[in-house]
Length: 188
Image 1 (cartoon, rainbow, N blue to C red):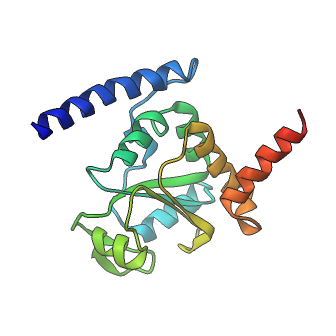
Image 2 (image 1 turned 45 degrees about the vertical axis):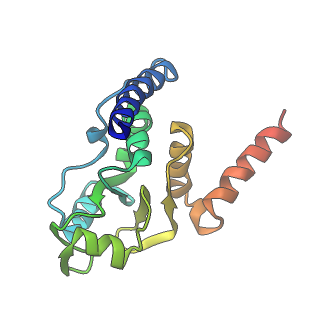
């Protein structure tokens, strides 16, 4: 019985989230969330070379697992939006890593390991989603880790702006976001 309830909730939630993403974003094209991610052979050294060739500022990795409801929500309400995809693709190579998978990959230093080892041992991914921003040397940007789902597409775009404009060097994302809200409130 519990499985039936869970399946119904998942199916009805899928429909409501798709409708709400389109209803809340008039004029924004809704695409498949897979368009957010670049194709990859899971060789992070190669990804660094591609990012440099393409004039990007870094690599964004989304760590996720298959049954993560917050990952699902991000993919179906934020990462599927054309404005989000276009903005992030302008500045980053974007990869998705399944934190539980046992597929082989090559990390930034050239070492072979599984996706699970890279996620758990190298990046301490314990809950998903985790968004990590790396520079063109394969080093994590200062304040380069965001854990969990953003509240909406605007907050995720603000997260991108935080790195693109290099606010991460001086302040945490949460203080950056709060300072913008305070500035906006002062201007009213």
